Length: 206
Image (cartoon, rainbow, N blue to C red; front, side, top):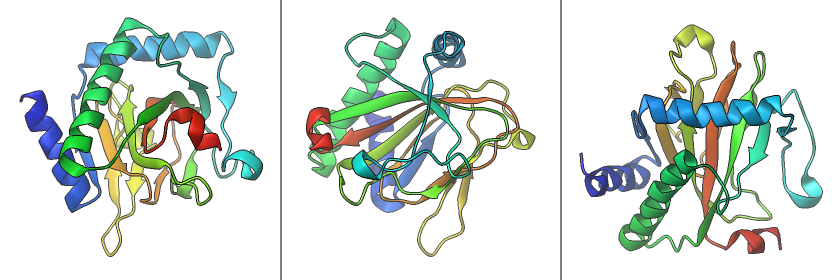
């Protein structure tokens, strides 16, 4: 499938249901190469406990959110991550051209959910800082099974929840205002999680 055809399907999914899931957006080998980078940073102690909210509302609540994160510098990162980010920039440009979303930039971090952690139902768009337009998650977990938990649950208004396994190479895109949660993980769960923004990153903190 060509990139434009895939981007068309993503745009249609975002317009029709608010989300789209794509297996093998990157190959298994690519996903594992990125995961190895995340694991190395984790072993070097570079990850930090994630919180909820932003700015003055920021707080640590382990019972609500148990993941650890490491923000990625878009200009200084490994070739395997740069290749993935280039594709996301192409998707951003395509969505601007076809859906007129006015996307300006993106922010992205590694996330790891240790065994026994979760992220309760929430929305990625902050009430006082509503600049996240599209959320996107690339999963990095080989041989993930139902019993491993950690599914992404997406809550669509008037419909049953959608449950997505965090399998290596899979990309999920959804509108950032849609409520979702990460179910409790029974093994460590890795991802690259990001957001397409309608403001440059520096202005989203104003």
